Length: 285
Ligand code: MYR
Image (spheres, rainbow, N blue to C red):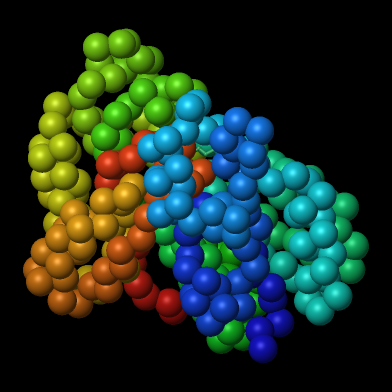
């Protein structure tokens, strides 16, 4: 067993099998429909969420985990581990990172190291899985944290929202020039810059957005580098599989995972959205 505990929040959307294989502890964020609150991945799956959205009278909202849940999680792990590495979704889109830090500061009997992935979804999952694999190999906290910081410089993700009004409504779309009613109909390529979501390139259609994202992937994959790639979808499994199959055919050295925008991120990005993220697969420390 590894000597370092690895924790993440639910928005990494790692499967239960992945969490169990690598001994990863997950702290869920919440999605709220009216007066009903669901811990995502625990109380509501992505499929159930998108189904529920169809009949919901009001659009859902989200909330970060309460500080007490982080405190309980850390103090339980502190019974077994001296060090806990916590990989969180970007601090620029959720207060969950700050809440994890607050809980870390009051945890006794273990050192808690909170890492801001500056991203979310399965791209955040790349950091979590890497941390878990390195911990399993017996690497030190410093080696793992240094590796994660370095990995940030080799990780990219681009996505498009099918309907920008969800990001706009939730206040998660930066770049003032876009926040104009008529502009909400276009499908710009989006990415994270300094922890927040900004437009990368303003294109009008999904086809052009996906072509741009594929071209950006080509820049990094064409050299034959073995990349870890995630194709992420909001209730569009067939389209995501089609994109993944094309990438696998073109870049056999790469490992392509199809993942989803689950309930919390789906609330903000909206059904039909798509994204691709990638990182270098090498694990040498
Ligand atoms: C909260 O209530 O604290 C959660 C807020 C989550 C905001 C999500 C914004 C969209 C993120 C898109 C991520 C795309 C990654 C490839």
